[in-house]
Image (cartoon, rainbow, N blue to C red; front, side):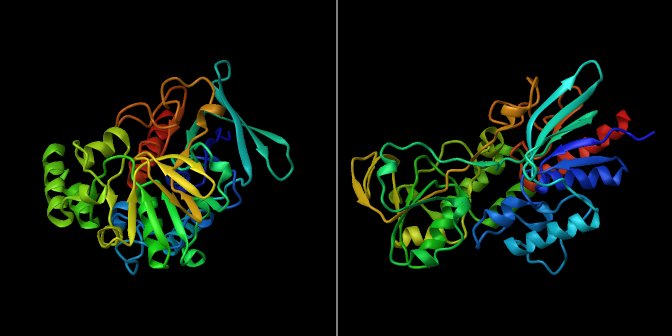
Length: 377
């Protein structure tokens, strides 16, 4: 008798990890992916200089390490090659251009019914399975905040998902909104390409190096989170000094605590700090409004710009299509329960890669979900 397949929503790294782990247990599955390729964010919507900010040993997916020839911090093109090899090795064949419109559990049959629109034929297709895995990722739909007067801005306005490199912006005055790692990376790339770059920093930030984060995560296995945070803050002060004079205050809470409690990643410096220190990147406060090409900031100052790049993150639409779940995911699509028990819901519902714990967390989730499904069959 053919077992009902596990339905996986999303063919990014989380969905691929889930598929590989199910494959490892010989559990049938189907993957629904709204784009026309796996890892579409990496392949179609990321900037050229993107690298994994953490050691490759932490970022590898289950059952397949990175090649030894890969550098410690893997660049975008090699990570994409790794994912393509991963798909080939585990014979993963997603159903592409399927946009999920609803997923609902049927108490009578004990199965999930998922309806997805085939973007090629425009027909709604129906899939049924005993288990449903939400692996659609933390970075789903680009988010651009509403700003008074934005529609009056005459220059180019783009989200970071449309930014590739700074070649076209040489000698332009460019404003980068958003001071997460993507914002910092984009600002650095713009400055390296000769753009007059300004960066909006609205809230306090921790700035650390790649090695600081690596050793912090290693030490977390042996000493308390509070001690690790104390050490990281001390090292950050030693290396980067007092950043408040550049417009970047340091938070009162520690970097690892903020990551685990709020999903707020510390800034992993790859060269932006030196550009800020030298004045090549100007740090500005939050934006109040826009009047034509002039941007009004919260301190009352105004500056003119040619281009605005929004590095303002993403929103998730899970709550729109997932019906009847009040346990697994919050309204914003992030896992509701605390680590390490965040991945399992009710009625055969699971999530992978939605706990703000990166690629390592997605692999952890996928292995746990596959083992749990195996035990229930």
